[in-house]
Structures are given as C-alpha cells and as structure tokens.
Image 1 (spheres, one colour):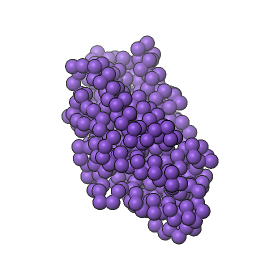
Image 2 (cartoon, helix red, strand yellow):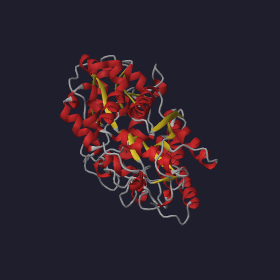
Image 3 (cartoon, helix red, strand yellow):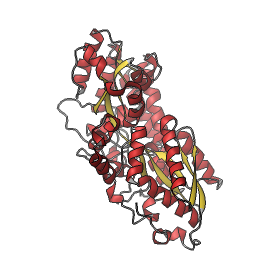
Image 4 (tube, one colour):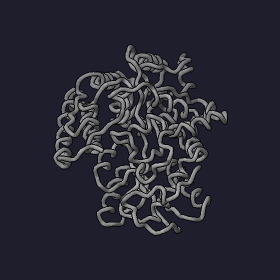
Length: 434
C-alpha cells in the first residue's frame, strides 16, 4: 500500500494548508449488525497500524439517517471529514456542494484498479471517481440446497422460469415458502432492469441530463412486477409480511424459505446460519434475454468540504488503508461484501480462498458486475432517488395488499416519481451534471 504525500495530492481548496501533523477525524457510516462490527474493526485496525492519526467511526443507524444528519451537520459546520453514503444518494451528494471529488484530492491513487461495476455508479461523466467505493455488493440468488434436494431438486435454477418451476415443486413437497423477497426497488426495479438491459428512465437513467422521466410502467420491469404479484397469489412467493420471521432474509436464514434474491452483503449472515447448505448463483434472468451487468450496491466513502489540511491527510491515509488488499479480503470474509479492486480480487484468488464457501460471493459478485454493459446498466443518476424508492415501495405494497392493481401501482409510481424529478430539476436549474 503506497502512502500518498499530502503535498502531492493537495488541490486548490487545500492551498495554504499547514504541514503534516497528527489529526483526529470522524467517519460516519450507516450500517448496523455484522457490517457495523466489521467497520469498527477496520477503524480499530487503522488506529493500531499507525500513530500519525486517529479516526473515530460513528454509526448513524442507517444510510438514509446518516445522509440527513451529515447534510444538517454540514450546514452548521459540525460535519465529519468522511461519510459513507449509499448508492441511491449519489446524485444528491454530487450536486450538494458539500463534498469534494475524491479523485481531486488523491489524483495518483490507482483508480483504474477498481472493478468496472464499482466505478461506473460513482464516477462523473468524464470518468473520474467522486467517491471511493467501500462496501460493494450486488444482487445474487440464494438457495438452501438441503430443502431443494428433499424436494428432488439437485441444481440451483438459473432463470425466472426455472425458479418458479422449482417453487411449484417445493410447494408440492410441502414447503410453505418456496421463494422470498421484500420487493425492494433495489432488487425488483434497479437490479432487474440493469441485468435485463431495460431502462427505468429516459436519458440513460438520468446520466444524459436532469430532464429524465421514468418509463418502467411499461416493458420488462412492468411484466416482472405483474408476475411477482401473480406468483404471490399462487403461494410461490412470500414477502416480508407473509413470513413467520417477518423479514425475508431472516426467513431464509431460519430455514423457513428455500430460495431468495438478496445482496452479496447478506451472505455472511446466511453462511453463519446455514453453513454449507447455502448455494449461490447470479440473479435469475428471463429466458431469451441477454445478460447485462448488475449494479454496485452498498456504499462509498465521500470526503466532505470545510476541513483543514491535516484532517484531509488523515482522511487520505484511511482511504488508502481500507483499499489495501488484505483489508478488503478480511472485510469480505467478515461481511460477504465483495472486494472492489482488481488487485484485491486477484490476491484472493491467488490465495486459494476464493474457492471456499466462506468467500463464495467474491468471484461471483464481481463476475456479475463485469458482465457486458449497455446504456441502461451503467447505474442510476436520478435526483431525489431516496424519496423515489419510498414512493415505489408505497405504491407497489398497495398492490400486493390488494388495494390497487399492480399496473395502477406502477403508473402511480411513475407519475409521482416524475414530479420528484421535476422538483429536482427546478432546484438545480442551470447546473451541469458532473
């Protein structure tokens, strides 16, 4: 791991900073549970590895809460140097004027080493990274092979048609919950549309400008949502509220449900609960559709404006530390999140550990992110997207509850989502996308 000198990395906004000296900085993050434990371990390891700086890592209880608190803290000049923000907040942060692009303060870092799927979501239109990918995840498919084999199923299904065939066979064998999902837009809208090469909005999902409009109420996404609704009525799919556990991934980990779609970041808990019963594969496709890349999930680390040179040197030191190959591999082991650089993945493969169940998500997740891409699988660059996710969940849950048809839900979500886009466009009128 090469430590970059602060003098070499300083940008205009750091001009005149004092010479290097020890600094104590804060890093605010949103994760809880096992992921939080791994982040705290990262922070303790950094403090133990050097004496120049000290970092205090402060949990915010969730990504959305962390985003709101950080922006409020920035307005009162009480903000941290580093913040962890999730994928959906990318455009809001880029245009907030509260952050500085990480590639500006670290121009000589090996940014080209980041896997393509991790780069594209957090980079500018010119290809520069705005933030440093940290806990990288993507969508994969999970199966409890002990339950599948008891129903006479020997292989994990690869297509949606195969998943539902297996679900019917499981149900006939007495399995009450063949497949589970929470129908979160990250899974059923964003990841689904990306790997099927389908847009959710015009302007290449917003990368082409702020005047984008949602379009997912027609086409593959709409067809899939209608299918999910029908499959649930058939008893093949259970949502959070349908499970005994009350949460889809908890239901899978408890053995209640046989299959689920979930983040690679869910693997640590699933493996801890079920061990070698768990098998994973890339997220299913509809037959006859060419597979495109899935999107990076999780979050990245952003650098906030308004601090002094010593604080930024400490931030650079920490960012270099968490990029270290061994640190990424250990983070993968503890969480199921993937390595985000090619070097870390190569190191994991060379160690022979990539073939073990403990690291099963690493190569598969990266392979999913690195499938051939197109203009619809680059990412989501739409304003007020955090709020839009809530709109999508609210409308589609009404459909799942029988209060409206799924088509009406999608039409309403598009209409309300476009209202949010127009408000965002008005807020940033005349601003050019970075």
